Image (cartoon, rainbow, N blue to C red):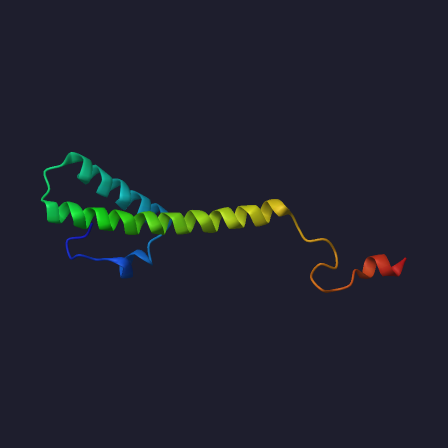
Length: 88
């Protein structure tokens, strides 16, 4: 959590690793205790925002992986004709 109260606007520009690392720090601080109720709530809210950023990145990675595993499209699937098959 930043001292200036940075919220959702800043999380949109975070990469996965940055969000994950900050989330780890938020969890560490919450588990350590010793914070006021207000600070704990602010940390929790920041943690929720960071978790959403991580989830977004992971869902995007999953979609890319699924697309790659699906393999290349068959000839002609892109709307073009397969000229090699027509030549014979």
